[in-house]
Length: 334
Image (cartoon, rainbow, N blue to C red; front, side, top):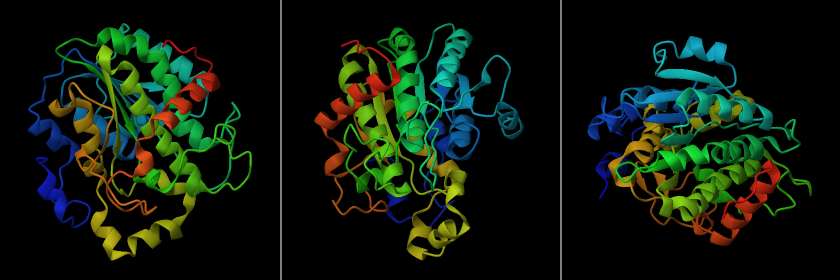
């Protein structure tokens, strides 16, 4: 049983006894223990990204934190930033060109060392929008950008892995993936119609999980593991594009209010996947509430716990991987 199972058994809302990301670092006895290791975190300037950065800073690791607007990020993250150890890298997840520039900057700053990559950045938007590269915004920002970033950092992740500390990739997914099947290869951008932000977001989050599953299958034997995590329901600015009424509808539901976590609590599963000892030599799993998710009910409900039938689908995972390689213009190395 997970150390935190009892704390999650009867949630009482944000700020209850469920662990925070900093508590995970403390319980793993990792304060100051990762000096010399390099962690890359996307979407670090707000929400659970900010709290993930705050907690991982306590490990002493070198942090390279991406943000679309580094000037705004500097204001928010002033207390975390530390010259030479915790720094910002400008990156727009909606632009392949920006990701390539950012990856080059990361490798230059880290001297080609990357031990942990946390793909956290995400968007939730109401209207159908395409990126400058011509891809649906959720799929591009939440999945394709992180897939490309991983591919560009992959040589460093593989080279940085040692028998004593395997490299890791953590993809921040969502329980929204319980509500959909992966779009067909010719419909990632909803070319066939039927766009709605709910399925679009869910599709991108399922892609996050599939990427982690396939990544671990391909590179786990070489000391590079990957997991995907559901952080929980959290009151962040992710839903800022959906309007005040959407947020208030959730907050008016007493049952849902008890499930909600604070950003500090929401970052805990990400941190345990990134640095927890349990995940040192394994991956290919979907986590929630600081442990591997148990089998849940196939009820198409994003608020229900557990993984579902489509969480693990090797054929679709391989299809998405190959499609993503073609989309971002990278050759397969296997």
